[in-house]
Structure formats: structure tokens, C-alpha cells
Length: 62
Image 1 (cartoon, rainbow, N blue to C red):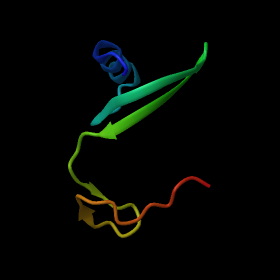
Image 2: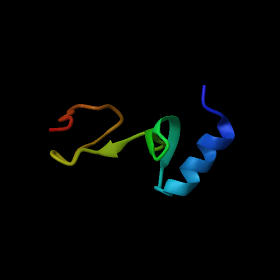
Image 3: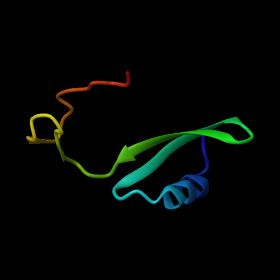
């Protein structure tokens, strides 16, 4: 399990509002995969613009 101090440091370094780093994995010496979590409990859908606390559409990556 990743160390809490390093998770906190990565969260501070990426400096994205309302984002918390929950996990990371070093792929190579200069590559890292970071798993993040939104601290907000609800958000606005970019397609229908309704506010919700649940994912109601997930387009994924192309």
C-alpha cells in the first residue's frame, strides 16, 4: 500500500482543486500512474448540465 506522506506530497505537487491522490504506481524510473479521486460529492454533467452525486454517463477514453 502506498505511504500516506507520499500520497499527500503527490496531491500537493499536482495541485488540482478538489482532487486527492488515492494510489500510485511507478511504471519506470521516469513514469508514474496516479489514481485520483474527486473530493466534491456532486458535479455537473458536461453533456446535460444537470447536477448529480452519481455517475449517469461514462464515455471512457477513445
